[in-house]
Length: 304
Ligand SMILES: NC(=O)c1ccc[n+]([C@@H]2O[C@H](COP(=O)([O-])OP(=O)(O)OC[C@H]3O[C@@H](n4cnc5c(N)ncnc54)[C@H](OP(=O)(O)O)[C@@H]3O)[C@@H](O)[C@H]2O)c1
Image 1 (cartoon, rainbow, N blue to C red):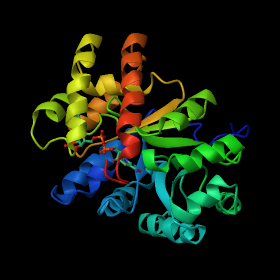
Image 2 (cartoon, protein in one colour; image 1 turned 30 degrees about the vertical axis):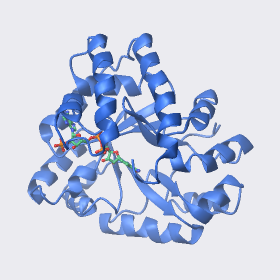
Image 3 (cartoon, rainbow, N blue to C red; image 1 turned 90 degrees about the horizontal axis):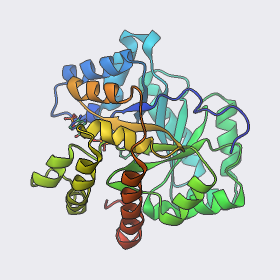
């Protein structure tokens, strides 16, 4: 891992994800209130130009209270290195910011291949860092994009430039494919776990038709509920935060909400995080290995 100071050093254990700030079915003012509350609690934020008008909600909240502007993780990429600067600009400009804490590298096609082969992209990543546009990098991973990070990691190319890996890691999803997961944990690389509560309350995911956005998640909620109940933890949000931090590589978990009361649940769950009992974690680990091999890696890209 990076021997120099990591850009993750002061990361907050809970990161406020901003997808829900882009939901235009919710009044702008209501979303703004939640953004302000998250800012006031000192959390890092995770955002992207792809989240509706979340950046406009953030821009307003930031301009009202510049002292409280959070550290940001922003999605950047995509298919070739020439796109990077444009993507950075389309995120930073609306926010009126000069740089971001962490660039979430979303890489496909030519860029993923270059990354896997130790190519020119590493020089560009360094340049962007030297210019202060990006303080550090987390590599985004999905089951269908696990191969390039695996090759890069094994070849040692990520050393000194990549601060960690960011992917869905929650009770119902672990989106680094099995081989990559073993490599990341074996090498003790930093992880940022996404989708804290796996998309919502476990009983709603299990029981409310249409609540889980895909059928596989409803089935996984049904498989997970008895393990959750056995743990004795009463609150799903608390369980999920503790689940993420049951892996020592996890530095933060990213969850989203448009509601102040749910934000408050995340905030109380992040206080004194105690890892879950080992046998509970082991049961989920076994499910994750199985789900990954039997389902996730065969799924159509972006279908999960
Ligand atoms: N590829 C990527 O980069 C990527 C992909 C997915 C997610 N993410 C990041 O991760 C963040 C979180 O992901 P996510 O929104 O998909 O998943 P999540 O945080 O697991 O779930 C959010 C959903 O759960 C609900 N919720 C939140 N807290 C709750 C609580 N205490 N009780 C019941 N329901 C609750 C929210 O509804 P309410 O708003 O009504 O509370 C929302 O519908 C995103 O905002 C984004 O920043 C990144």
